[in-house]
Length: 133
Image (tube, rainbow, N blue to C red; front, side, top):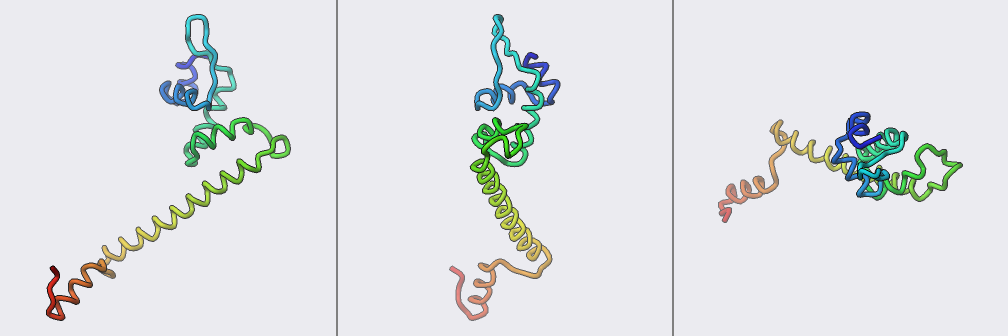
């Protein structure tokens, strides 16, 4: 199938498909007229790539995982890849926690339950007769 057909079948732009090839995530062969020709399983491969990108994995991790697509853990040694995926998942969890803390701080400010520390220090200095400069 040609790139336009693969794009239509997957909903992924031709530009993204060319990027996937550039990154070593997708392969095509060139016809005599230089058009790209993809194997029929490219539709499933693009869906797999899209899933991993949406999960926040890098091109490198995706490239390393492509040989494992469609295999069970017993059929392929994927312990290093699974370790990397767990690391990415743990980093996402840390980012979620930081975002939740930031959101909680902002919610406290908006609810009038907290004031930024710099404002409290300036207010204390002014109340004590000091200056804020």
